[in-house]
Amino acid sequence: MFRHNTLRYGALVLLAAGALAHAFTAGYFGLEILTEILILAILVLALDMVAGFGGMVSLCHGALMGVGAYAFALLSTKAGISVPLSMVAAVAITGAGAWVIGTVCARSHGIYFIMATLAFGQMAYSYVFEAPIFGGDDGLGGISRPDLSLVGIDLDDSRSFALFCLAALALVYGAAVITLRSGLGRSLSGVMHNAQRMRALGLTVWRVKADVFGVSGMIAGLAGVLAAQHSMYISPGLLNWTVSGEALVVVILGGLGTLVGPLVGAAAFVVLKHEVSALTSYWHLVVGGILIAVVLSRANGIFGWVEARWGAKLDRRLADTTRGTEAQEVTGDA
Amino acid sequence: MDLGFWTLQALNALQLSMLLFLLSIGLTVIFGLMHFVNLAHGSLYALGAYFGASLAAAGGYWTGFFLAPVAVMAVGLVLYTLLIRRMRKSGPMAQVLVTFGLIFALLDLTRIVWGDLGLPMNAPDILSGRVAFLGIEYPAYRLFVVALGLGVFAALAYVLSRTQIGAMIRAGVDNDAMAACLGINVERLFFIVFCVGCALAGLAGTVAAPLLSVTPDMGLHILIPTLIVIVIGGLGSLKGAIAGSLIYGFVQTFGAVLAPQLASMLIYGLLAAVLVIKPAGLFPAKG
Image 1 (cartoon, rainbow over the protein chains, first blue to last red):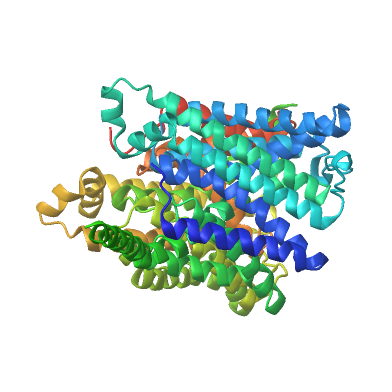
Image 2: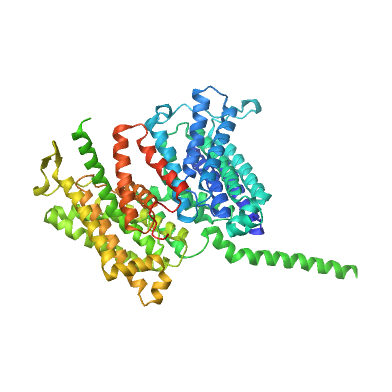
């Protein structure tokens, strides 16, 4: 089950403060990068939920994000449904799709699960690529952002949109934590550690996996909706398996199964990508090298490494200080 | 759509199947023997194409044909000593990620060495013409690819089923701990299989080079079809690799001709169906 510790709270506060400070000080380019980080963070949060807490390493989350983006684009531009309603519908559609994929794949494990999700993802990719309604290779344009002028916010401004994405990320993080702490999330941890025992306890294992996969799909769908609104244009490339692969890399770089780690990973990944791309066009060589180094070091990503080194120590020291003050109070009373 | 059309498409399908077979057999036996997931197999194929094209430019097609697999095997050897031997004991997740990192690194290394533009490679003069039979004309080079694939299949089938080392490999795939107890050096066996698998990937790249364009991302494009082949066929078995390759080749080729709208979805749908009905593939090495 997911627990917060001091280090995780600290990292969250630091990340939120950093994002807010950046949102109010950065120029246009900085805000674009911040928005990119926030959207990627939502996607990798969805992936960490299933991969880190359910052992379901999915290679279709990029495609799920794409499904969300296309569903939103089609509903809002072609079907003439209002933007907020399209957003909700797109998230629901993606969640339903993910639930079906989760149901079908629930029986497979390890490499077979990875391959099965890959197959579904690529299926969606080829369909979007081929079908004329999705605009094929040309993609779809003219996507609009929600109209919040009622409360005096203009989301076409990149600062407002970055803050809007930050709010969405905070909401999603809360939803993920609640899901993982609920009965469903606890059952999922049980299934990951020993599916046989959970089955013996009377749990419908495939149902638990599919349900969490569905929730995760909804989150990925939201990331897709925001990505579509961010660039106001979408192309089938969004659904390609390399997007899912990159999301998995971000989760691993940040720290699998920590929820906070992938957020750190998303920020590090996007910043690194822009910095390295500015220096050399061989950005993949750098990220490949870092990935190999991280896996070989056997640490659980950047955040996992920090946590293993200082997390426990920090908690113990804090516990000691609280016990110390309690002890003082006791002696004071006497 | 007369007989000639069907023959032509069947040959196209067969040629694609053989190319995929050369790639998937190495990958599947490496996985079956040592449960090692080598996603970088496609990158070795791309390296094979580059080595082949460069060597062919220097010393003619056959220099590339014979030396490129050796060169790729050397690269495989370096990877084995530096990385893969250390990853043997880690879980599939770590292996997938390390080899995913290798894909990225090798992709950019080929770009650094050979540049972003495609390299040309011509078929040898003796195979550059067309052969007329059964009322159609077919490029001789493609027939050569089909023959080569069938030849490699026959050779591997013989080695695996009739020789001592083949028996040792089958024993290792079936139960590596028991094989080790019987005095088989499973570690050395894996090393040999790994080298042969790399050489075959290099060979596939070299023979594919005159058919497709040699670009840095060719390894990335072939990876998914190769994985589909081994998952449909079942991991670890020769029969699975050839069956998977044929299924993929024929579904892809005939799908593209008969139902172009559905072609690319067809194969993924098939894969999903196989995984649902027979999660371990059609002919898995272990019952």
